[in-house]
Picture 1 (cartoon, one colour):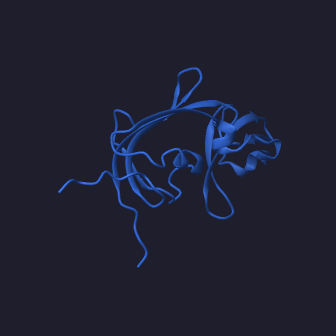
Picture 2 (picture 1 turned 90 degrees about the vertical axis):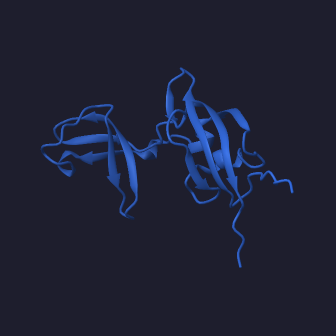
Length: 152
């Protein structure tokens, strides 16, 4: 009996290698040469636009596609740049422009912000996604596809 090759559909369990590379060739994230990434399509582990590009792929398939960071992560907006009092940061915390700092939202979610400017009174933080506004090359190699769970 021949085994059926599974295609990726919503709910599939997927194991893959992937990378996001900027136009200058620098990798923003990559799993090639490391442990592969496993997730269930649609569980929120991967950005929706990236997930959608995987539908229909099978184990052994490879994909390279050029994407706009604004489409993947949303456009950068001025509203996402905030001024925070310097007193909101620990006094012994070393701060420097360009530094990425982890914050906890009022809802308890983790988010990152990039320190743009700092003076004695306040810090200017950019909460836009750091890949917004960039062209991105998304490379993927599908290793395994498990069946989508069916509801009983």
